[in-house]
Length: 268
Image (cartoon, rainbow, N blue to C red; front, side, top):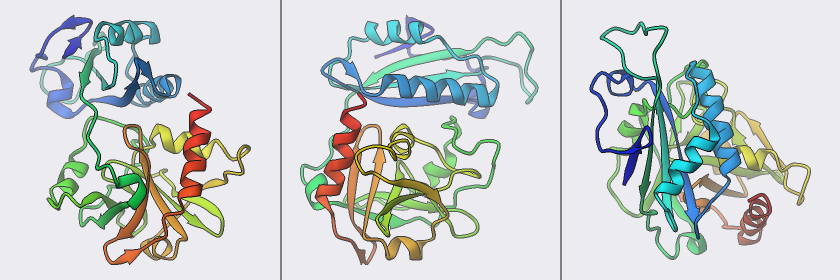
C-alpha cells in the first residue's frame, strides 16, 4: 500500500525527475508494534539529504500523518521524496514542487540463526564511485548497488562489500560496516562515497556512553581480515555479526553485539 502526496496511488507522472534522473532521496525504517524505530533520526537524515540536493523536505507532521494512514504494525515504511516534475534536460524550473511517496511493505524474513551464527559476506567487483557532493546521501540513483547485488545469487551470502577505486572499504550493498580493531569499533569514512545510515550515525554518537568507542577511519580489506570482530548494520536488520568474509573467518563476540543493541534500545 502506498500514498503519493497523501492520496492512495500506484503511479507517478512520467516527467518526474526520479524517473528521469534518480533525482530524489529516500529512507527505509522499521515499525514494531506500531512504533517507528528511531523516527527522529530518520527524519533528520531525510531532511539533511533533501537539503544536500536542494529539495524542500516535507514536514515531519505531514509524513507522520501519512504513515498513520497506512496503519503499520510490524512492517517497513519507505519514504521517497522526488524533486518533482520537469521537461527533458537537467535544468529544473524555479517553481518545481517536490513529490512524496510513503509506502508500506512486509518486513524482510531473515534466517532465524543469522544473529547467533553470523552472516557471510563477499567482496564485490563493482566499485563505489567517488563523488564527495553525494557522499553519505541516500539518493535514488542506486545503480552501483544494483550492479553489485547482481554479482551473487547464493542465499547463504547476506551482503557484499563495496570498495572504492583506491581499494578502501566503503560499505555493504545494503549495510554499513564496523570492525573491532584494537578495542575500537571502526567504520569506513564516507566523505567521498557511500551512504551514511541511521544505525551508523547513532553508533558513532555513542562514544560517551556504555563503554562503546567507535570511530571513522580509512579501512582496507587487510584491516578487516585482521579485525577481532565485524558486524554490518541497517535499519531493518539491526546489528548483524559477521562470521566470514569469503574464506576469512571471525569470532562473533555476542556479548559486544548485545551491548550495541542494548545501547541502541535506550535511544528509541
